[in-house]
Amino acid sequence: MSDDMIWNFIRDRSGKNAERLRLGFVLLIACYSLGAFAQAPVTNSTPRAVKPLIHAHAHNDYEHTRPLFDALDAGFCSVEADVWLVNGQLLVAHDLKDVNPERTLRALYLEPLRERIRRNGGRVFREVPTVTLMIDVKSEASPTYAALREVLAEYREMLTEFSSSATTPRAVTVILSGNRPIEQMLAETARWVALDGRLSDLDTQVAPHLIPLISDNWKQYFTWRGEGEFPIGERQKLQRLVEQAHKQGRRIRFWGVPDMSAGWQELNAAGVDLIGTDDLPGLAKFLSGAE
Image 1 (cartoon, rainbow, N blue to C red):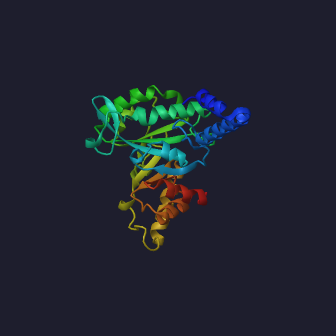
Image 2: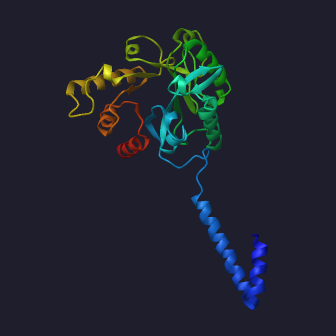
Image 3: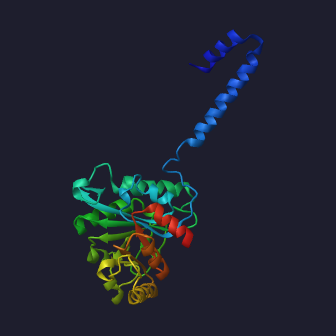
């Protein structure tokens, strides 16, 4: 029923009180509209006011209800996407059997990031110069990177640029992990992606412009699994690795760390740069209190 029909109904039955009822009806509709607007969800492309957490890394981010946006809404400044090259498309999934032609790297991450950056003054978070998009290559390294390079070139205006001797930071820094075409990338003079290194790379002379981040498997270097006290020898070992990476101008992270407050506490205390988790609200709450 339209507003006019309702008004005619009121007028026919209310006589001299019609105008008073009409005003009440208008106020009622206005209050309802304001309430509905207040309850309307924030659109995915709308940046929300949230404290950026520069050490928070969303492990397997694409498995959350809203890939990318759940992490950004929690303040995470690093997200991870596993990628497969299938029929020329970069599809995001943990396993090949789970790929979906609609869940492309472009659709889930690159386009939403570009839109947010445009709406947010040139950055993902206004307070943070750059956020990390880690791309874990699951398919064959060389052809996947060739396809990735073509796609990233379309977004170069927002991507950190790397050369053999310099890094030019922009809103999004792409780090390549998993199957990495190391020799292929070494031969390039300019790139929109850098490599995720391993702890063994700390003992080489590879420039941080090629490997700005060191990542490795916690379980291969530490016996502690989150129960009881962190052994003092292992705590000192962790601190040495962090210091070594930082002296070389690299960040450091570990995967397979106990995904709980005890593990987060040890990583944070040692100065580990990216703390990965599947528990976005839990880590966000921990880091918000710790930072």
